[in-house]
Image (cartoon, rainbow, N blue to C red; front, side, top):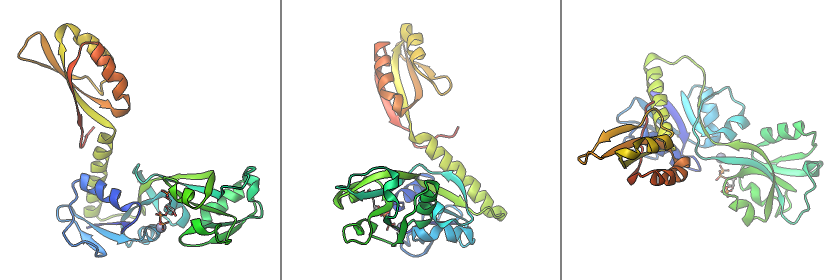
Length: 284
Ligand code: PRP
Ligand code: ZN
C-alpha cells in the first residue's frame, strides 16, 4: 500500500481530505488514529504534524506526502515536488509593528526577527545583504514584537487577520506558498508505483475540472455560426438537434474566468436558456 503523509490538523487538513475524496479515495471509518487505510484504493494515510511531513517522506517512512511548500523549503530534506496542488495558498512575509515608519529592506539591519522559518529567512537576508538576528520560536510568532521579544516577525500570512489583530504591517513578501505533493525519488514497488500513477491521474482530472464550467444553451439554427464564433471551445462544441427543427442545442466547456464576458456575447448572438453546470472531473 502506498503510504501518504498528510497533515493531521491545521491549515492543509480540510483541503487535503477534500482532494483525496474528489479523487475517489474513501477512508475506513477509523479516524484520528495515526495510520488510516483506504477502503477502496491501495493507499494508507499517515497523519502527522506538517513540520514532520518532509522528513517522513525523505526517510521513506511515507512514500509521498502532501504539505506546504513553506515546510518543504524550510526543512531542506531530500524530497522532490511531484505536483503543485493549488490549495492552501499563503505567503511567508516580514512584518513589523504598524506604527513604525518603514524605510525599505535595510530597516532590518541589526534587528531581531522572530520566526519558525529560520532557514528561509536566513537565505532571504543573505541575498539582500542584511545582517539581522534570527530568533527561532515554534508558535505564536506574531506576539513577539508586542512583548518585546523581537523587532519584527517572519511568518505565514494568509488572510492577514493575525497581523491586523497584533498591530503588525506586512512589509516584504519572501515566498508564495501552496500545498504540494512530494516524493522521495526512491524506486517504488510495482504495486505502489501503480497506485501513485493512478492517484496522479485522478488528481489531474480533478484539477483540470476545477476552473471549468459546462454550459448548455439553445440557439436558433440561423444564429449558430455567430454563437459558435463567440465560444473559445476546448475542441469543437457539441451541437445537437432539438424537436423544433429551427433550433439546436450547443454544449461546451468554458474557463470560469471567461464566463461573464462570454455569457453576454452569447445572449447578444441569440442564445437562450443558458445552463451552467459544475464539472466534477475532466479527463483530457
Ligand atoms: C499561521 C501563522 C499565523 C496565521 C496567519 O499559523 O503562524 O498565525 O497562520 O494566517 P492569517 O493571515 O489568515 O491570519 P498556522 O495556522 O499555519 O499554524 P502553525 O504556524 O502553528 O502551523
Ligand atoms: Zn506548523
